[in-house]
Length: 605
Image (tube, rainbow, N blue to C red; front, side):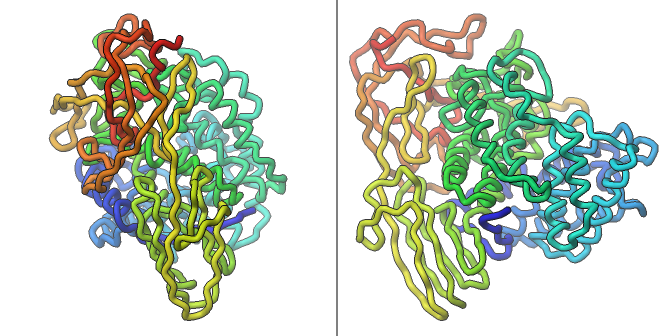
């Protein structure tokens, strides 16, 4: 199965605001974890004594494509240093994880699945000819151990069995050997069947369990797309069915599913773990490539333009473990935590608030999004994500100049090295669509190019701001793929300290965000007016947002959540107006680190 294939980091180059976003990431935590964080700097994966399980593979999963997309020689060399060290420790039988032979039976082989996926990412970036052979030995050894019963899937490996199909597919495309298909069947047989668990998703509990763990579930969404062909099973779009259940009982206005750390319901003050944001994005990237169904690309945009930037500091030196739709402060709770299974500091910005998995794993979000801008199949190329980027492939070059999603004009310049067809995915919400000023209605344009042809053209459309209904009588402003919030001005309070051998020191320290402006509002008009500004050096800037919506609001008595001084109530105490109507500028959710996103209409219970 596979509608579209991915290009490599040598063929796709981010430009404009997208390149700037990657440059900020490279200058922040992502580009420096190997220098400042012991779990990467001194990992057992490279012969050290620190964590030898998921953190180095997680980091490499984003760091490697980031390095190659930016064509940064230093980052590439540092990534290769880690790969070289990991390969040097591979055992004769193929085992590659930093674990003794005696401990293999109790070592959670989620790490085997993860490092195998990372090696495919590295090969796509580097074309290092060692990798297919290394990966073959890793997976053959893993198959032999599973087949014999010497190791079994449990815990994280059992919950994430489908992650191994990335490497299995990589190998099966090269060597159609039956043991690979047998390995696929073993992983499914020993893995969790999420279709039997949907009843658990409808009533979230303050209980930690694998079956409702948010990251497991967001990884799970791609399981059918990556496994059905290898298992010889039909594709049924089961991800749509499962996602609809998750969203009905746990959805947010930016397309996330709440999970702090397990499913957390529909309250706008429950959190969503950052790992789940980037894993949901990756699932959507693979689902779109496998099916060509534009709904997955549109959902991917929603996450990338809202949820991902909102939970990272503007310089990407700090991140949250969990974000909230209505987030009036990011301060450590002095007593019990608001969150179902997270600690009281999970929502502050820092090096590793609550737990370090997101510190390593958030790195994959922007690079893999960039690698999904253009896809191909045969002699057809599709511009799947209309963000600023350039394709340099055997078909020719396709340069897309745009400030989408902040503006809705897409200027393409195509130079064909061979005859090919360029398709352009048009968002479903696009209105008044034109190609060089001529109206069209298609949601996928198709343009043919002859050998040697060079052509420039512009696709334009409009997006209409509107309100979407949320649970509890609340509403959210949206325009195209951008969700808008009432921004709350804030003051940062910095903390430098050392805990369990991990130093927090500027710029990789922790911060509380303390509110310094009013937030207790309700909408009082259904009219929304779009305001534009330039895209700044920080694309998702909280001081210079590139687009805003003007709305009319009135003050209300919203109130605080019972027992908390820094959390707004789940729903307002009253929707009766306490002021005259006033205009306010709503900022993109991704530009608003403190925000109110789900609001009532004044006077309407």
